[in-house]
Amino acid sequence: MKRELKKFESTMWLMIKLVLYILLMGTFMLIMARENPTLIILSRTMGITFSTFCIVGLLFLSIYGKFDVGRRKSKPIIYSLALAVLFTDIVTYIQLMIMNTITPSIYAFRLDSIGSLAISFVVQLIIIIIFAYGGNALFFAIHKPESCCIVTSSQESLDNIVRGILKYKKQYKIDYIMDYRDKNLLDTVSKADTVFIHDVPLKYRGEIVRYCYKNKINIYFNPEIEDIVEMSAKYYLLDDVSVLNANVKTWTMEQRVMKKLLDMSLAIILGILTSPIWIVSAIAIKAYDGGHIFFKQKRATLNGRVFEVYKFRTMKENVENRSVTDDDDRITKPGKILRKIRMDELPQLINILKGDMSFVGPRPEMLENVEAYEKELPEFRYRLRVKAGLTGYAQIAGKYNTSPKDKLIMDMMYIEQFNILRDIQLIFQTAIVLLKSDSTEAFKTNETRKYIFKKAESEE
Image (cartoon, rainbow, N blue to C red; front, side, top):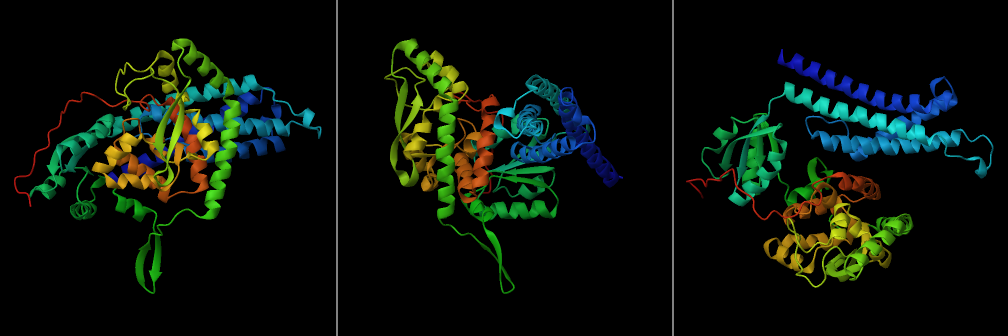
């Protein structure tokens, strides 16, 4: 009976997804058909437009994320689907306008029906919002929060993982907290639906993972450097012996050339397109306190080379140089706006043109931070195996106050799994950062602990 219910639920969610995607495409086709009637009759225009929407839509869904209710909160799903649909609409619209150009002349091409395109997107956005909130409401009406057991090694590690889990209270309920050295560990683990393993030595983590796999218990664990190397490894057979080959080398010449071409072309294009923002920002900064427009700071890039990164100045001049905290009184009024929309980073296009930075890569840390982080985490220097980036996986997936170790893991995943298509994907995903309310979340100065880590009585 349980198995039949699971099959029914899987089919139900598949049908809901199909209905959502059909509604999104149907909205575009029907609204645009008001001025392009061939879209709703059997014709070449209808066939090509339909195909374009489907193919481009699947491409952008793979970039931004699908309708995965239960796994993500409603707002991230809305942001992802909205961006995917927006770019799909634009590409399909341009294709439609090209189809409408009958005369073989560049002067015959026109961008008509822009009002219909805007109305179409607004209606699609309403559909996405309804399905996202409705879908999650239905999912959590069916599923109760999973009973979770956290296995960790210290109070600091516990605080770190709990902070993440508590943002998903509808998905997870923390029932057990265990020291990995506790003699009753496996008995407690067996009571949970899901186990979070955080900052546990590899040897002990392996034992817990094998036990959970044997007993069909869901597992989450934080990756270490060894895991990142393994993820990028390829499977080989030496005769009949299975091995994983981690080819730890620098990027190929072809990869470096393609990345350089992408960097230069994007920096020039974006520099031109954002020129009005440069002008408005410069005027606002100068008018506020008469100080310098740009802020320069020494940062580290490829192989530890030091360079000066450029930013629009968002703080008062001649203040202490340290990471931003909540309600930081050093930030100016124009600076708050620029930091909120991430436009203070625009002058780094100059760094890209100079060759100091790449468009995508690990964000360059302040030299003081690099030195401090490397004392506690020597592997942090692995981020300097490639050029620093204007954007990167750690900036898209993480936040301003993401821990140094988590930043390192995200950046290592990017470095070890690099390809030019991944760069293009991350560039598109950067748009999500502008929508996330917590992307610029500063370091918390006071965090209360609601969950207490108890050391095991019988430690080795």
